[in-house]
Image (tube, rainbow, N blue to C red; front, side, top):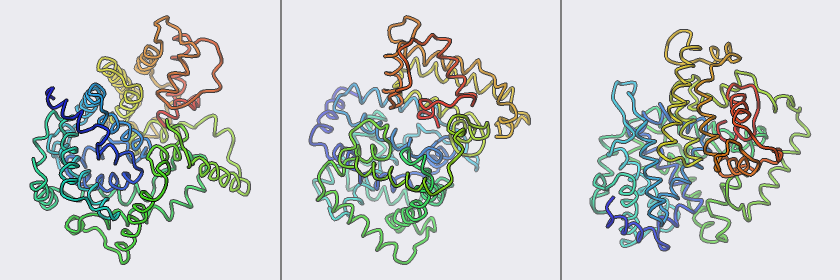
Length: 472
């Protein structure tokens, strides 16, 4: 992006930016959920999501990472924006393939990336309207300009989005009428993800509480999302229009809009809700802290009247369970390269690695994948099944994993003394994994000890609260 464009971006994303204010509101999640369905209907995006994304198995982690990335892209500091854009472009450059119809997809496709921004803008406008806050002409023009600038930051220019708001609406309608499809990704989001979304980190140890709430909230969320989508889109994809859902949708949006306007600012900020869902999220839970404590108390009461789980299950896992919780990142029941690439993406994102270290990380995971194929892929079909993994978990190859652990050690050993002291160890897990480890003593970690611990976790032999937070 040119210096002139960078200067314009600095002005657009300044203190008065509409978009920066919007993405820090909790209701932005409504727009993002709706936009995700519209994005998934694009053949390129839908295929990339199904083949590579972890949004089904790890939706809360995906939500957190998206939030962090968006905040970086909208940062007033040009250097922060440039670094994040480069990271996203490297990430997308590694995502390509062929869909079931034999069509190629590529996450760097300029038209598809423009459609992502377009859906977010249109969903934001719809969210305002349904919340009782329709924007006037100048405000719409300004918001659209900010979204186009987001595309310029990531893509280098915004040529694939119409130059004016007047031209945008015919473009949006044409995309719905001629480019979108009822992809597998759309069906997964509406009928699997929203209905079967796993518990957020806060409630992961309280499955009964989460299951009871999800049984009602899941179908309602799906119905509200469908009812908020453009009617022409719903007709094209034959989405159900159940009686009463539009009334329910309008009531939900109006209630959230009223809450945003009437409640104190701290109650409706996205950081407060993320901290409520995940106690490890960086940020202050503010007024929701008492709600979180009450939820914990309710879960404790339920545990008193239900059978206690096997305590050993909190320390060790079976190979089968480890496969499902850690290795199968995409949630398709098999271990393939996209699963390992997802682990690499997560580590690179959390540690904010530079290009050189990121490439080293991917090369290490690629080496481990070749070892897994050679040693565990008994039928040669290019994927490792749960049964194949469980049968050979005790003798997993590890040369590639040693390279991964070596990289983690190197970026943690900031003073290059070949030892990780207690402060460096705590810093790694606090900044990268959002956890304060109280069980780590004052002793030092040698490279061999650090590598040994990582390999024990990745082979499923040793439970680790820290690494669980990152990958499971």
